[in-house]
Length: 134
Image (cartoon, rainbow, N blue to C red; front, side, top):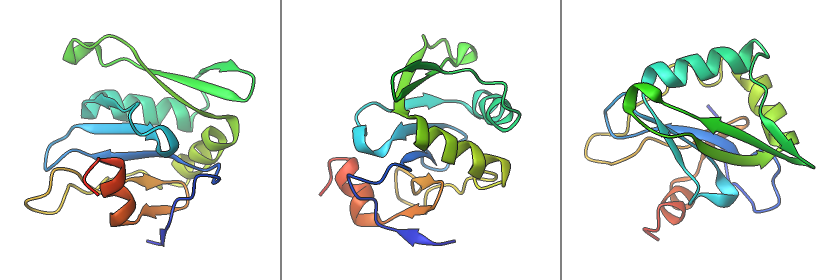
């Protein structure tokens, strides 16, 4: 697996990660990391299937794509994740290629696994900055 730094100008920044050693998944655009959607494993697998099969029809507003994450089983209301058309397209291609299969849990003692995006894994320093640790 390749590790890349994520720059503010990088358009391929839609990412997912596992929470701790649970089956909970988070998704966000790394440029707006405060807008994180959380979902259970079933919701994630359903979403991933729909993305792969080109059945997900996210809302579009110009160059912005809005993915509504709705984990009804967890009793959550829909949470929008905003990204670019290009980032969504790259995420979709990577999903078809199996990039997001078998997301690894966080290393023992850590709260989150690494952010996985279409082109690699977010560097630890960037992940800490996104989590407000650095």
